[in-house]
Image 1 (cartoon, one colour):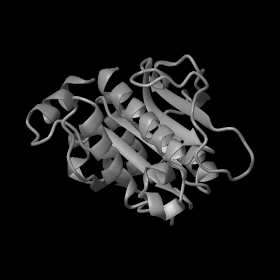
Image 2 (cartoon, rainbow, N blue to C red):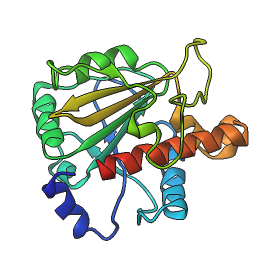
Image 3 (tube, one colour):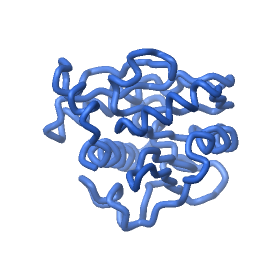
Image 4 (cartoon, one colour):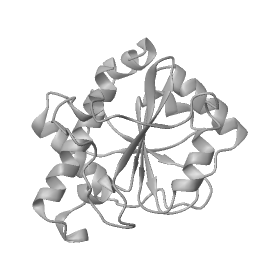
Length: 210
């Protein structure tokens, strides 16, 4: 992790929290409200990471963006990054930041278009199943788990790299956030929720150790 991000963590009340990204374009960035508190609780219970009980909400142009090494974004709708957003995100990733984007079914085309403005020479690529993100804490030998069915497509994990470091991890046709929600929201079976939580932990552990 970049030294600036490490200093931020050192002087925080907690070692780690998730910053939910408030983006423009009309997408419901706020969807799955119970998901991140449940994931943070699991991080506290299952790892040695000292996590905050709730996430923070942040816009790309907020001065405190760089206080958060880990961004999460999700939604069903459109994503739009302004020219200023693109410049800030480029600097954020260069400083050691990481983004997990989780398509909640519907943001795929606009997210791909907008995120590739950040590093046009480093497009999203599908990560192989032997990538460390699938083995950082729990073992996922077949890649992402399938939490919710939409188009009968397999789940895919895509990455964007800066200076040989994974800075964006995009989970598609997977819906991890739905699996993190309270059990009565989607009525997912326990094994699906467990897979979602385990994969979420993998992503966080990977981001903090690479």
